[in-house]
Image 1: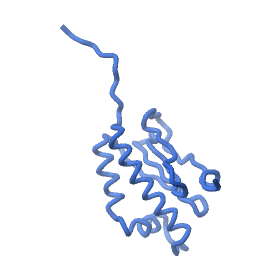
Image 2: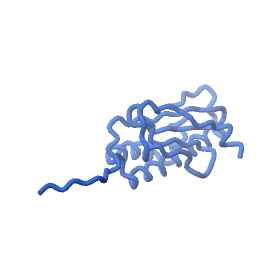
Image 3: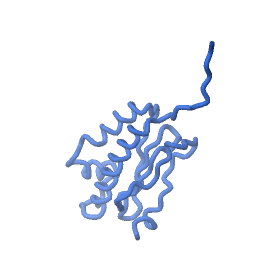
Image 4: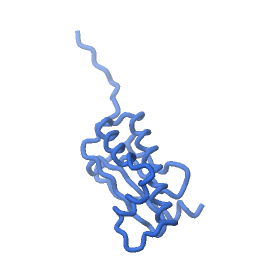
Length: 132
């Protein structure tokens, strides 16, 4: 006798994704602080991120480890500097999973619960978020 179930399992584990979101928040805040108070003139985005994460260099590699655990098959970390503010986005290929501006205390956008293709692009407006 076969038993069919109507329930579906989420593609991404909430527990692991929230762990990733916590680290992304820490990194985005560190990068945002580096943009505001560090000496960033003439530096590449990669160097600014490297400088910002010097005090906790395991965070970026940990994001990759967690992405594998969460079954993110094509992990991508994007960043955009909007004036003196940092916005960071984690994607699975072309699917946005989470996005955060480093200027505020709350985590900004969770997308993994309703993943959609062709959404891997920065959408947050840091000027609007950071002015409050």
